Image (cartoon, rainbow, N blue to C red; front, side, top):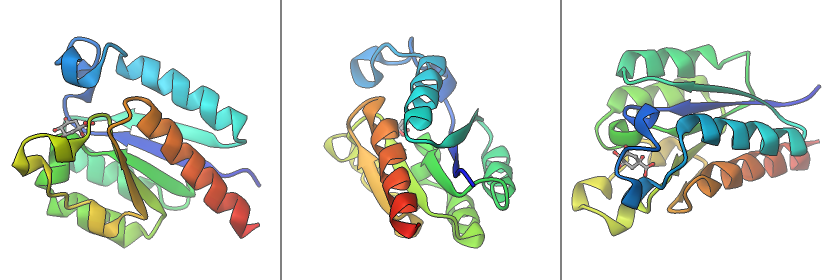
Length: 148
Ligand code: DQA
């Protein structure tokens, strides 16, 4: 059976395209969704893709991935740096999860250097723009292939 990955996007990522383009570039979240869908298809993966500005909706999405998807890619945006609830949700479902960021959070303000997601993630990819998502898809596709 083909594997499926849920791509989860946190607050303000719906503003991509106009939001601080000097940091986040000019692609919209819809552009990122399309590139993820294309890349996932090329790796034989199905994907779900969602965005919410609400912490609870993100927790619900993580919980809802159980039994529906085989892995998670999450850009928790600002909740990365604040949310014990997202960390606990990821831990509770036990799905392989990759943390992604468009920008290199370690090259930015100090409050962005700490992540509640990193300790429960398989790995972290940040600083490569939309490619952070595509590299995360590759990482999960490779992992699933090695398991066969
Ligand atoms: C971000 C980095 C976060 O620090 C920030 O709050 C975001 C986006 C990124 O993708 O670079 O909203 O997750």
